[in-house]
Image 1 (tube, helix red, strand yellow):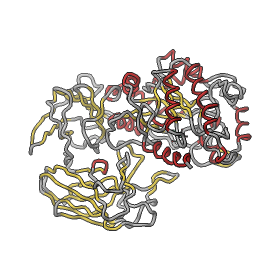
Image 2 (cartoon, rainbow, N blue to C red):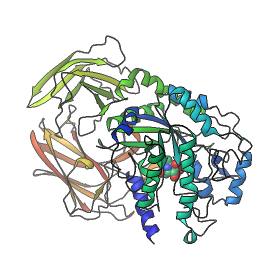
Image 3 (spheres, rainbow, N blue to C red):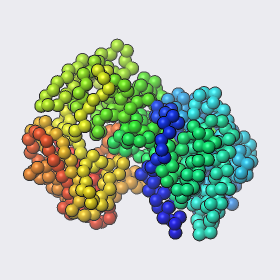
Image 4 (cartoon, helix red, strand yellow):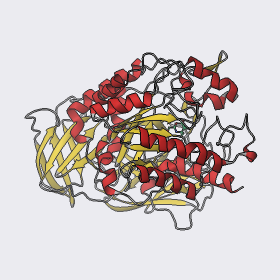
Length: 589
Ligand code: FHN
């Protein structure tokens, strides 16, 4: 029973990002500056590549054993066919280097229990059980050493579908009879010791899906790592707040700056381990925009590749990595060793990073007008330029209208870079920015739930992505204070989140019947939510919302207080209100 409870807590921890052990500043300094790493999911699952006995198995490739409920005795046979003759560690490291990635993390053992290194603890490993008879982890460690590339190991500490005492294989073994302590002490910890003793300096161990692991066990594991290699980092998915940094959910980018060290693992297509039919590759533009956005929120971007059974990183992934690398070559200063945005909110035009006396404006929506405007910066700007363009000097003016700082920069008519154009601002000191939520130069006001105030007794939760959940009561509210500069009539829009289906974010998986009311002072707008169109975030287009028009309000300039309530809550999908943002947009007359 205790293990079941821990499993639920473990899952939540994994999804929302776990807590953190006391931060060891010197251990983590390099990682903070790195911002961008390569994740590699490689194992026996690359052979079936998503297909088992002629059947396409839905879901992520490395989960095929679980999803198709393949018995251990059958899955084991794959080892006999594992012969990745085209594996070239040097080439992988050079690919990562050229992409601008500053560390690599490879699956030393995933949930299928197969060790991709020469383990003395279990014969179920790549050296002893395959015709390949080589140790790819040793070869990769040597190549990383030659190229000055920090290397980390993924190790599935809780799930092990090969072992009756590991967690997760319910089709071969009876979970009630599993002795997790035995598995942990006779396989997981001994193998982690091997990884730390036999492959030189290990940059980090990337544990995953903590599930049933207890606090004492997570601590024991972290202690083993630090005792053998004091400089080795441990990720947050070790469980129970014992990591050196936190991990978000997979492919999840938070809505605001996190005041702790965090990393998001991201797929290049929809799978981690190679799947021959997964061609849903993210564009290099999306990858670049996500990377910049993650850096702007104080995070690291760990981008995955899933090599084939022959040991080759798929070509579409290579192409995208090259394009990200080319962008970073020019714009890397705005990513590496940066501080997060000093602004408390996101901009609909892009993302901001900072370094010393500089601000980098990563513009993804290049203005159609001849100027770019920014509010709330109280430093004197010494110079504005396009990053990477030698001698580029942009003209600008700074003013203080209606008590707020406004910077107007004259810009070229077309975006210097179709992915992200970076405007560099050299300031008279470290960035000093108003923390007030305000109207933006285009007249819009964006109010994300992660920046709103909820009553102290609320049952509503707000996710990292700024989406409400558990909102089933009409007495619940979210409220914001903001500054408005221009009088006028504003259209009130609600952005709510649908659910994800296997094919992506699906507007049919959405709660019908919710009626929201927005009050700004004495002005009100209310409507049953209609689907007025899907709307994507230009920084991260993969998580679109549904936009609903609630009506209009006429407002005068000054301090505003806006409250949103649900007058009626639909019950069709039992989702409650999944609100991300309220937006005010100047109404067109
Ligand atoms: O179950 C794993 C999955 O296979 C993959 O390794 C990802 C990477 O973050 N982690 C787990 C799911 O969150």
